Image 1 (cartoon, rainbow, N blue to C red):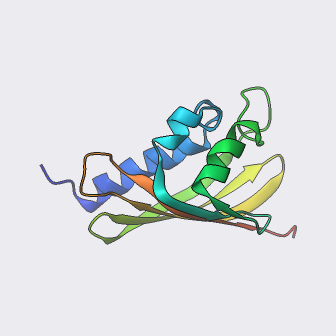
Image 2 (tube, one colour; image 1 turned 180 degrees about the vertical axis):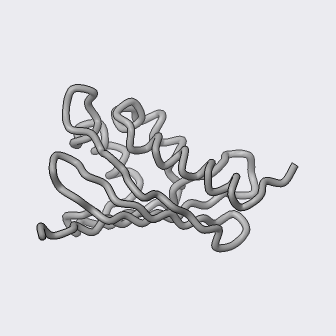
Length: 127
């Protein structure tokens, strides 16, 4: 059964929200299943992350603890760019800091499911 664009975007949004949750951020195993083997990120700090550095750092970053600050996403929307490629955009607030975010997700031909290929966060300056 082929999924339509709305269903595909909904599935990718579900996975993005998982990556923002403390339960997944604090677990290398759960995060590993959602990051593409070729994952890269440019964080709000300007730092470039590869897959291994992100997997090892996520469990100790803000947003990974149930009792600490957590990501609050808003305005999440997505577009299917090509078969197996989805682009999401949204904003987050974490501990009072806003960021605009962009993620590219891809689904390989194998059965591994949608995985985040690229992510970028841009800080939103105070008004």
